[in-house]
Length: 416
Image 1 (cartoon, rainbow, N blue to C red):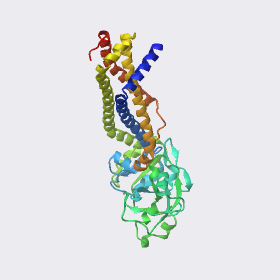
Image 2 (cartoon, rainbow, N blue to C red; image 1 turned 120 degrees about the horizontal axis):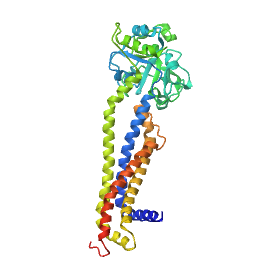
Image 3 (cartoon, rainbow, N blue to C red; image 1 turned 60 degrees about the horizontal axis):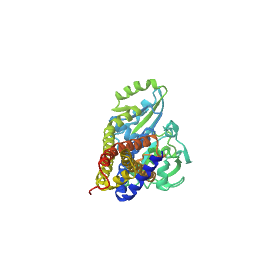
Image 4 (cartoon, helix red, strand yellow; image 1 turned 90 degrees about the horizontal axis):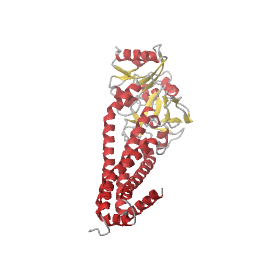
């Protein structure tokens, strides 16, 4: 133990004497670790965020399109729907005896970049996220009148709105719109608790309200203005289905996909999400390989730094031999230096990753709807740091072996 402590002290002082070179080596390793852990944690957070967006729904139904595309625009609010489906088709499926509940969804408008979701009370009754958690209200209540609106937590915060405030819908889904429905302002009736899903960035209105802002005032009936309960739109974008028995899900899916009334697609959300991961899986592998090569490059830089310093340190090694250090001690000294460089670089890289995640989490969530909730380094991160340390020790053995061999031949009269 005494010899190990002495060697560790010598390795530390040796690095401090070459502090500029050591600092640059540590910085290179830290940056490579930051990239590698950043890619890994961002990939993990994105998957968890997507997987917790929706739970408890057995089918997602929309106009005929690809399964992944339907999932992206109907659940994650990414992209645009290919077409709408007829309300009569929705009713025909919703009224089937094996269907327990349905949630109609209509997309199209926005509020300063936040998607507007036209739906019904069923959305608040049956929508589940995470581990089948229901939606809850931080303020107010679900919409009761035609021109009521319920805001997600992120939308309410970024728009600076509270219950009772007016809100104006804009045509289209972009952040900037030149057509505003300011003749029919809505009123905020409620604000949902944060969910960490795209629900947080949505503005929810009744189907009747969404239809009303797109129709002339003369075409709107008194019934539509008084209550959204009896309203029937011409078409919707998609709808979620919950079954009385999941055993019947595949049969209903097949019947919807072969529905004669119009071309529809029914997908199981979990299956469509698995297909999405297959699509992006190749990209994840490529990013992981690139990040891995960056780590290896950082370690090779460390190896190069130690190797190039060996000639300058031959007298140092000879002096250590003169005071009694044996060649194995010289070998261990060089290996310890490599371990210290990699260890400090890994710790700094890990710290940079989590500081960056904590700082960027609000922006990532508000911009992309992905919840990043870093809780500190876990076993996975520590395992990666351990692997990097082992690789550094293995690479450090190369210059250590060279120093070992030289220390056997060099004396105090080294020719430099």
